[in-house]
Length: 103
Image (cartoon, rainbow, N blue to C red; front, top):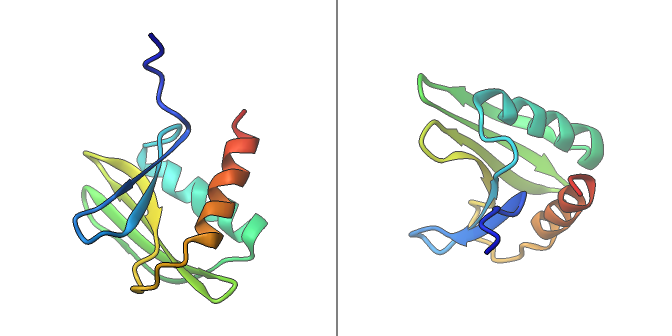
């Protein structure tokens, strides 16, 4: 039985939003790497950032789509759309690109 997790795992949170969990790099600095990836490959710009003791939340905008990126010391790193719009097409493209790069 293969118990290895995929590099990017999706799930719905309690509010019904799709979360994209970055299983390959769940550390604090992994958020920095992911933000740099979004800036380089998706021309994302940081709109806000907040770092606490055990968590981080950054909001970037790419193609006029807000992307919230979180680090939680218990959960790891993940990204999602929190603007109430159901269109996940950009986040799905980001996921597909990451899956290709992480093969």
